[in-house]
Image (cartoon, rainbow, N blue to C red):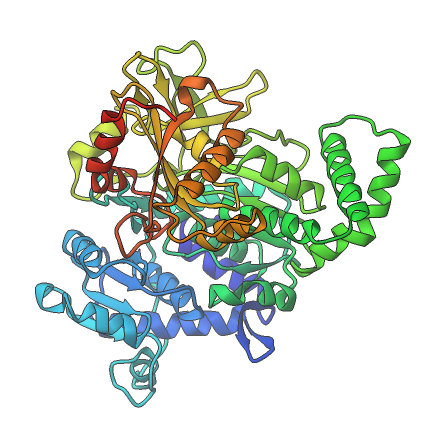
Length: 591
């Protein structure tokens, strides 16, 4: 077999080996319809031919504003086959965000997922005269602007491949911009492919595996792990579509591997606890005993006869039924993109869904480290994948253990597009990447993440606070939708908190209370304060919030408080509520 050095090599090799085996599945009615590797190969050749007709040559940019689909993958691999560069974006982004990216990368062709996306794009179209071609992926086949209509008019659907070099850019993936404007991360074919190949060495993946893809391929984690990696091993990829249909689609596809972000595991944790709370007390006691026993066993401790009996009883009565909701065939789940709370990971694992948490970032293509079967330690993000080295720079923290995570390896980006100063700040002269993340390596080489260097703030007393671990603990509460911890140069910490309105009202009713306005009701404040105190008791007292600012508006992409990859733009939140925060600190009373 020829050596795989580029995405073209990866795609062509898999299609040649797998042939008529199923690759992509899409839901039609109450079933998934699958198309083969060979059919996908033909589709990619057609799109590549279209790109050639449109004048696409080596180094051109092809922008893609669309949700996951067979056509998304076809455009991506066809672009690679023209030695051009894919620039993926999210349909949920604001048109102004699209405009910033498009002005920065200046694409020749822009693919738009749907007519509604095209309508949004229309607001900025007049500002982007350099875009030569607009094509809508989904739409009426009689409409000449749609992809299917353009493909149907092709006279020759078999354009030759223009082979890219391993060092050629494959993607410009624009970071979410939580601390400022997005930056275009330049990932070469070699960056992505070495990350895929290293990940296959770390994990036991087979051509018999199936995934249900719901992470956006516009995000580096979704694209590398959920698309390129699964295609490389010859697996089947079901495309989820509407996120509200996720649970139904899991049962239809019956995935063997679930690739998800912590939010999904939080939902499992919350949903199962809610269901168990409605069961008889004897079932509740059995559940608690069995979860504790399963967690103890996972840590390598021996179980007594009562614990073993509890596990045996809970397996058919509770655990197996929970797993069946996820299709009943899961071998394991991989969590990435953000921190997964240890207690949540241990809980999901106790249900019989093995969870392996990893760490990465777009600038590293993205996987840096991961827990694997036989090498897993809860509370860590695992060991470095093959070819990657991790070092801890404690210069900025002056801490004996915790410092900035610095990585080196073949998957480290080439730099930021048209941003040499930003590139110089994170890439050292010898090619190491300063991640901006804080953490440490334990004695066995497992990496522990403690927060972000830029997010860390210092109180007036000189003590540093990393907000992320506290926020993640608080967000486990069913009463809380979102939160941001604040306290830079202040005497104590304050938590800006978005309550989960319906659940707060339910809890109030159970206590015989009536809630009129969550953001202004003192009863809600007291309820949330008690809940947050419970959730944060394991942290040092100076880290725990002394006051709350209860918000009436949730964090969303539309209001600018969230990135499309669902990361909080904390500075936006703090800026928006700066006056209310000032009043809180002006009031000398500490609740």
